[in-house]
Length: 271
Image (cartoon, rainbow, N blue to C red; front, side, top):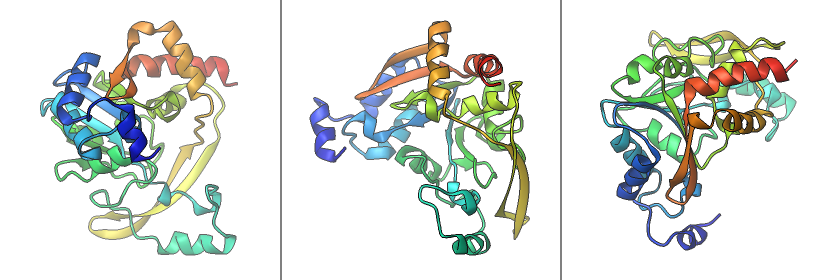
């Protein structure tokens, strides 16, 4: 969708002030822990682009709250399994050996969208250390959310997702669906169903030096997340608030309720 389409979709510009008003109307509260998935293009024409969205989210949560976004970096996954696009087999070892170490403070996100990438770059945003599935955070609990992010099982019990869960956080889906709701991955780790184990390695900085870290994980799968989300909304409607932010459909979701529901759903539906 081009910029002309974005202009034609809205009667007036989407601004920081109108976004804050919409967030308040949806139920976003000062002081809460909020994990955000956002599509800039879904909002219509935004005055200030991604920066306006980040500023509005910060203003809505306030410094007493905590704003969290995924800051994943698929460029540090195994190049041997890349498929969109794949790279030639004789490139794989070169990619593994020559890519620079992951730096939380500067390595750009990949495939996370303009809002998450803009948020990552704010000077007072902090970021976890995982080379492929890091999270960025700002606010009162930011340091605690991103601290001690385990390399093994990076979306599991020692991840920012689990910290958001422990803080009774909520998920804001801003023009996005359940297929990109990373909190459901936490349920994949917790649920009782057969899982495939995987391994990974990536260059990082530790103690000021470039080193390679190896880690173990489980194979995750988002193919049934939309079906799970639909069932969740049918069975737990009180855990989801729906509304509009700018021109985007938005959902405000109780994260622990979603994760707990997904644990049981996976046990019943993944065998």
